[in-house]
Length: 463
Image (cartoon, rainbow, N blue to C red):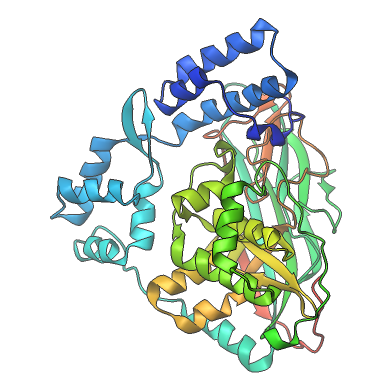
């Protein structure tokens, strides 16, 4: 499928028969119906483009919901011991398990059980006591120390050295492949990015200001692709006062971005309910942060591409992972007239490196500030009031932003639909005749070194 099919067409409604087939998990029938409609040659262009996008979604969904319901029950029973069918049904009713129909039978999302142990301390403790899970532990002492230092000194600076590697699984003889690996955008809190080495010669290194920055390389799929790099983070501690907020506020980053950052009637009503008659943009943003952290349950999600309208999905289902929560925060802020934008990449605490998304919002005269609803929500679940307050206006220094914008094209655009057309965390790969599908590629991020900087005298303005 061409990468040129505009994602905004995800907002076009689906024909009823195709929608019914997908909802019942009859994906073969859905594909047949889509292909017949397209082949008929009578579709309006907008509907044709929507069906081309839907075809990719239908191909992806069976790889998301891979655990038959009975297998999920048995796995939980093995992990928890005294676990009844009534408990399992309650998890379904409380939407603690993400499920969908596959060929008419209920299947559980591949990450749902791991998510239960992440967000339900009672279940995690039961599994630990049976020797089925590691000790869930508590809040990270290293993270607590970094936050305390930010508060005490006003800012924290650190230098990180990272390695990102993608490996592919050849299917027969080696084939030519093009690979994009994420590297840090040099803006906001990030400075002095250095690309140290790459696995392949003639690599194209994206411009420092690229909105989704990558190293692009070509080779064959029997070889690993990797890049090593260094960067600095300069994090200042923010404690803005509502009374000092300027009367005049900017209007940039308050527009819609189809299909996701979309001001639907429901989201506008929700925003009105959250902020009421409040006029101060700082207080508006805080009210939205409090709503997301208290009422949108953290949950691993299926591939973002399979959700036609992510913020509304989060607001209706009241669940979402870090990126879904960030998009809901951004969209509600923009509806309220508060500039807000995306930032994402990696969380890079020693011993805990993984993909992560968060947000920024702008209030004059303070400028751009950070907001991490998922870390804030975790603090809410654990009753950590200081940490909950910290993640409104601040984030910790353990971040590598590879994407400064949501849903932005890469500097060298792929020829086919991207693995993740919205974000830039795991990289992209494609053959000459099509994308490298899920299951035939894996990406691993390694933190090689981290150190504090001798001086943090400068207080950067985040632009």
